[in-house]
Image (cartoon, rainbow, N blue to C red; front, top):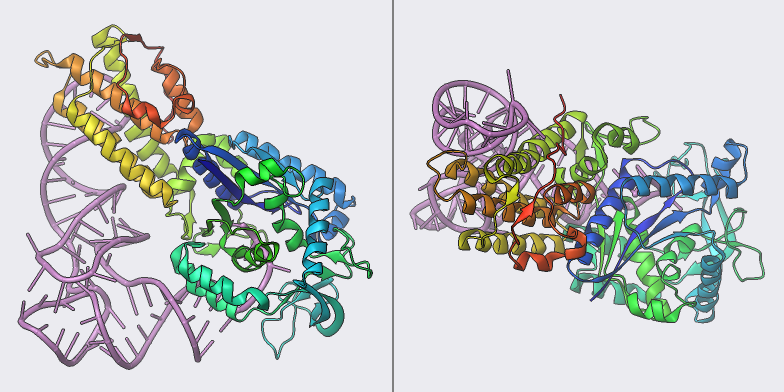
Length: 494
RNA sequence: UGCGGGGUGGAGCAGUGGCAGCUCGCCAGGCCCAUAACCUGGAGGUCGGCCGUUCAAAUCGGCCCCCCGCAACCA
């Protein structure tokens, strides 16, 4: 089976914060899970580089928007590298190939009447040089800069949302397109009241020119959304496109629901393309009860957390701490607690104590047996529950399922006490524990791939979890292996 | 105001009619192979309020109070 997954394109007017990492790590974990399940995965991410805010940000730094985009897209790439993100393609909206697709799509929509020339009536904030929607009619101030806005009316091109409103509403109610489920009503309401969308900009000089006589630029969101098509070869590499489209899952933050759950499918319907399987909107990370934002200065920098704890604990925390889809509260304390209690005490210590027993009681060689029926059964049931949760994109619950095996193995060691002289089936017990650990490692690999690989090598299991995939769960562990030197993979933090 | 989601032991949550559960924290004990780790047991809640339906309600209905989200381009 093919599996096409995307993150949003991140806007490069500023540096990445924890939220960008969140979406990307989530997509990466799912991509890795599908690969290990045997799917042919295409994982797309990238950067969104046009638009008014880029112009401003570049001006503030006294550089050209292109220069700022070059710098910041590298910053994102660098972070993804350090986070171990296994994307297949990193797209930038300033790539000529992408720009060409956007122009072609625009022309096609125009031709079919899905875009039409009309009047845009609305409010315009001169200082921000942007169209805005004032919060309160009586106030008429820009929601961004809080200054007065002017009502204007000018010719522009509009996306004909009305034409697809009913079809889309029907699809949303009848499918699992909008995820999580509790967003459905919200989106349907939004859709019902959504006017046709203005898709050209008169005063923005950093963008893709629209193929119309007036010399407008194309609205950045139209530009950005189309990356999901151009990124897999729409209108350029037909074989690739046919292979992967439609996307199976598209991850977004809850702030961009309107664009992905309404405007995006309208464009696709207009192009006659099938819609993605799911648009999954996750929640925000908050600090205390406050929303994390640049203006408040309380944004969490992923770099500092990674430097202190390492890449994998950061990935683990993001996906374990909070149910995907809901908001979550970040605190250093909760991070440390997760780290110490889950990764150090439960998991790390299990591997460490088990390997120590292999070293001291088995001369460093994993005995060759067959797994007990009980443990093999438990593994199968655990994996079953785990995969179901992964299919539901319920990461924290999937990890919880795998953790049941970790807890079981710790208990099993305690109750069978293979360190005692009286323990008669020591070989079987230790074999079972190593077999169980191997299976836990497989299930944890999508979340903490490098730590898992380090443990895998330490235990001298053949190949790697990613090469083996989940098929290995059905097979016994071939013993007779001499293990490598014992190391602490997750060191306790004070 | 409209639509939606919530209010359950110290914290965070699960639980859509039948003895109120989980994780963390706390207390006590066990074990001692291990990263002061792991295991077991315990304390702690009249499930926001009032009224009602029912043999039986956290769970259904009504009214009320409080919090949050979306209606407004922050992952």
